[in-house]
Length: 295
Figure 1 (cartoon, rainbow, N blue to C red):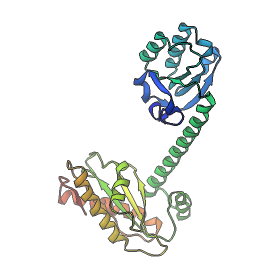
Figure 2: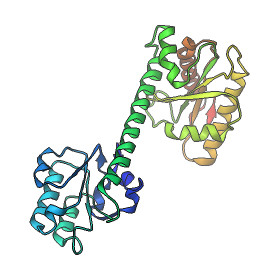
Figure 3: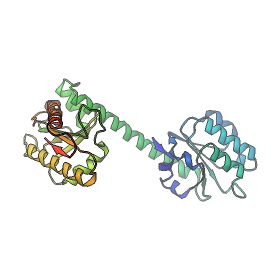
Figure 4: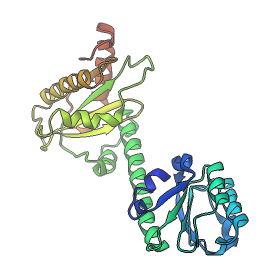
């Protein structure tokens, strides 16, 4: 879910100013609501960002404070109020309540309507939710593939098509670990691996996919159907580039890289993954990960 800090960077919300409750900018936003009636508070939900003209509470400081308190009790994400209905600055009591409850309070400029904010927000929230669902499907698919949960080739290809897994192509797995595969040490951050891969060269002609079923795995896929395209050579080059880049970007700690065997069918990916882990374990025994090494 998006945080309030991230939401406040979405146009046109980036034109609004947070005036209190800055400590609550880490609150997660799940939905957006707008109101002008005072009796809707009982229906607020956790994670809800509330937008209002503030008309019904503009002259009632007690109601303003009560609104913030009730929203905080329901773990709402934040409150936006249009400034044109307040004849002067927001009341001190309102600002103090927002600060006390760490509820982000921001002012909406007079030239923006509530609908100007609601629709872009909903679009971003739906996009984020769709992306999160896709990432969850991807994680589950590759975890099942590497752990041999999928036994039907047709099922693997049907599920994997969404993530770029193609029939008739060759595959090699590269296992990347910081520390021993058995030690429980922190693994190389999977979020940084795409950066490492692009660093090694974007013109290799090899497709790559990421999977993190508890470890960091790169799956290389040959670009042409039925053509190995020197995939083992490419895998070794990529591993070497990863090690060199690791030395430059993070001098502390070591990294172990295991390269699996080449497989000419999608159902062999789990075998390549297993061989890559075995290579990493062998590398740990031969040379403890004080420096970056590859097997």
